[in-house]
Image (cartoon, rainbow, N blue to C red; front, side, top):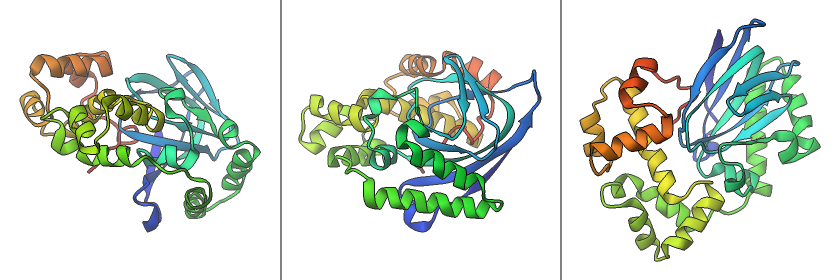
Length: 274
């Protein structure tokens, strides 16, 4: 089994980093631990702290994790499994911190990700080696704090104000048409709004709103007080059919089937805005 441990970021990083999560354990040869990976409006940069390459498999293939990987937004759910000796630490980032820190055109890697070695070159692999040399996990967390702080101070790019303004509107605009409200508030055309979202988030405004609503549904399920009617009424779905269609597009399952198979979603995978 895998053991998960949370660590908070340094105070000045809290606008960008939700938390660090250390995942460690061993999955014996011939066995695997399978997860349903679901969209959670989070971006994660992982570093492998084990001398062994962690092996992570999905329906898109097998991904050995030698040094690290940046995982951006997801627009759909898929199954993934771990095998072998696992010791990975991940920095869970608030959107759009990934774009700000790594300066990537996010639409090119949505649902895919990129290896740290490809993202940062030799510096990325060297940094992972330095993390791996630490025997105290608190030193690893401190090094991650410093790494992200340095990226933000020296190499980050500015996020477009239209995106920041739009994200702040989400809770209040879901009922009235979020995309229309975002464009109107920012005094831009829907086309301009879409260009900003696709470049800096990886999703269109419509897709992001769908993922935002979905993350709130999963939050309700995890908190144990979920009702389909309440989700429809609270989260801006037009009607039950709209809700059912969105849910099935993201998970591939009906809500009832999802609850039967996944009554609780591991917080390692899903993160939310409060």
